[in-house]
Length: 308
Image 1 (cartoon, one colour):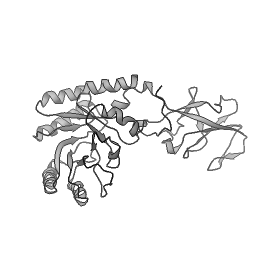
Image 2 (cartoon, helix red, strand yellow; image 1 turned 180 degrees about the vertical axis):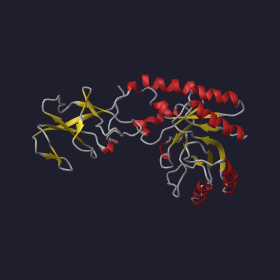
Image 3 (cartoon, helix red, strand yellow; image 1 turned 45 degrees about the horizontal axis):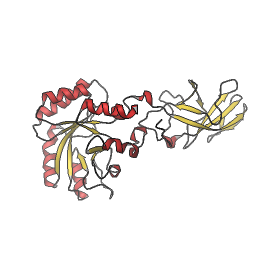
Image 4 (cartoon, helix red, strand yellow; image 1 turned 30 degrees about the horizontal axis):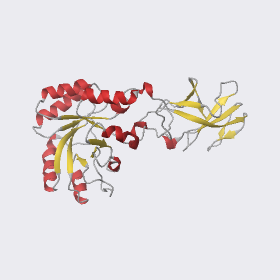
């Protein structure tokens, strides 16, 4: 199908990728994406130590977020963890972890990662704890041009001479080619998530079912918060709510549309249902109809996925 073809195209164009399957699985669910990720290589990157157990036993989990004070019993012994500070190493030592790690280096993201003056202490802590470093990691911010991200990665690679592979993010095909040309003796592996699974969103749509419909009059109240009804119309119950990741848009508008017209929420969505108010005289969806849902795919948890 077209979706799987675009995955292959992205993987081929960038080359030597590590597919990322984390969080909500980019709207598909992590388990749904794992077979596709497994077909792309021997390693699959996940968000946290609590997601590593989803990776098939035949593949190695690379955990992107440093571990906290608790390591789950389900964490595979073969997992590769990330450390960006001495404290991260101490957390692993406290939990008697003796496996492989990737060293995270600081970027303009200013989230995780050792700064140049912290790196020696981190590397010494890794050796003293019996951990095995298998690579370096740099995660530039999402915002900004690829050239800026490449320049930041280039600066670290120029500073840190090493035969270990470099795991990088947020660079495209041209950025990867530029780095590989500049550092011919280094292996540069590109972590790819959003552009891999959601690179062409034209073939993906979100929708929700209309489950019920009630006529209401001006002066009635409805919903969890006894919201006032200010004119005659209909209440439309849509089978999607906060449990599915549904939220009001940043513009304070409803995320629901019917026949390309926005539907107004009576009140904020709750758990499994969103209540819509449609004034009399306005085209109203009926029970059995579907409405379009405007939400980031990286946040939603659909009940059902159709591969048609």
